[in-house]
Each structure stands twice: as C-alpha cells, then as structure tokens.
Image 1 (tube, one colour):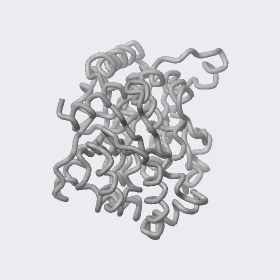
Image 2 (cartoon, one colour; image 1 turned 135 degrees about the vertical axis):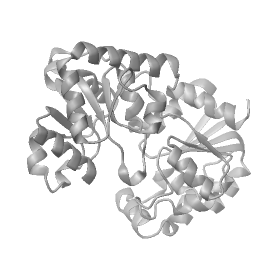
Image 3 (cartoon, one colour; image 1 turned 120 degrees about the vertical axis):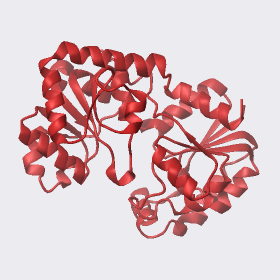
Length: 341
C-alpha cells in the first residue's frame, strides 16, 4: 500500500511521529510531508493563522503540499486537518483512493479561535474522520457529517509502560499524587483546592506560571514539558496519577485516560460516562466529581496502598490486554474501516 502522511513540522516530539513510524514499519512505502514547514517564521505565522485568518496562508500551504505530491497513493493520512482547505482536499482526492483525518482535538468549539475554519469547510470531503470523544461525534452530526469514527484514545507500547529507573530517577520522581498537563484556569483552581485540603500532589507541565495563584502553587509545580520516557517515569513513580479534562474542549476522555493505566499507576479521573465505559469504577480505576471527593479517594488509597495497586494492576490489564488500543491496534482499525475490510 502506498501512503502519504501529512503531519506537523516537529514529528519527533508528538504522537503524529509515532503513527508515521508505525505506518512506515508496516507498509514500507510511506512518504511524509511536514506541512507546517509551509510557514515562514512558524511561531508568528501560527499566531496570525489562529487569531486573524488562516486564509492569509492558503497560497503558501496549498503550494507547499501540492508540489510535494509526486505520485498517486492508496491512502493519504492527515494529522493537520486545520491546514487542509476545501480547494486543497479536492485536489488531494485526485491523488488517492482514500483520505483520512485523525483528529485528537475538538474542531467544533471556539476555544482555538479561527484555527479550524479551513477544516470545517473541507470536512465533508474526507472519507473518514477519526475522533477520541463522543462530544465530537454529536457535533459532527449536527453539521450533517456522516464520515466519523469514534475510537478510544490510544497508548504507545514502547513508551507508556514501566521504565527502568535509576536511583536518581527514583528520588527525583517519587511522589504520592501527580498531575501532568499544561495549565488551564479550571485545572489550577481544582489543584489549588486539593493542595488546601492537604493532599500531597505534584504538578508537572507548562504555562503554570501564567496562573494568578501561581505563587501559592509554585511549591508543588515543576515547570516543564514531559514527553516520551520521562513522562512515563513520572507517572510510574507516583502512587496515584490524576486525570482532568480540557473544559473548553468539551473533553470527557483523553490520552491520559489510557496512558496512565498502561504505565501501571492507579488512575484517579474525573467521573464521566466515557471513562466508566472503559474502566470499571473502584475495580480498574477510581473516579471523582469534585475536589473534596478526589481528596477523600486519594487519601484512602494512599493509606491502603495494597488496594490501590490491585486496582492499578486490573486497569493495566484492561487497557493493554483486553481493549487492545495501542497505536498499532488503532491504525489497523482505521485502515480496515476506511477500506471496509
């Protein structure tokens, strides 16, 4: 099978590169276009793209991508649907049998300003659009789209697993409860309440110094971007890992939801229908509705660590052995679906 992968400009640092490597290993004949390289001065350009108008960049994006499509493909796999205009996708469809967009974001809400303007016009031309969250399916149906596929957020077998820890790692990353994510106002409010209640929680992530209460959160915050094995080491070294959702994105499930149990740590998540559908409450994960319930649950399982490890072990088995939702499994499912195998 001949595949063209259209992805971001820093493929070594995200899930897009993982998916590209899996496709490359399985199908061999896989080409890649780093679509964000169509921008001059990417940081400034992306700000203008999102906050003013993506249409300013259409000639550059279209030309950059089309001049690099040298042959016909069986499948074009898109990871940057925000850059693909209606005009461009129609031209790409002449170069392939099928075209798929893997969307682990929410293009139907206003959180990202104008980021998704191009996609919303081009969406109906994809053969398949893959989403993680049912909220996207509902919103896509309101738009009259019938080309959606709902999947459980995947984990990566080589990364989201127990890692070898040095003595330095064990001391550096040892924590009772961790939360790994980029700052948002609601998450900061939630974690501040947990801290005030007395929970020994540690935050890892970027932009937390933007928060108005950062001085009070500073002592429990490590400003950083964790990825790859370091991310897994932090999760693995904690007794409990928290999972909160991007409220502006209408998330009810996220990649953390499967990565944490895949690594082997007890998952303590906001209670949602999507979460309860994959992990049984108090048997494979623990859930909460508010900071007080979260504090009580964490406090109980920190004091009853054998019970915590038992739930974590069952959650790990569910994610890695039963559901079969690794990136490898996911890509197989997507390709079978789009070609109706």
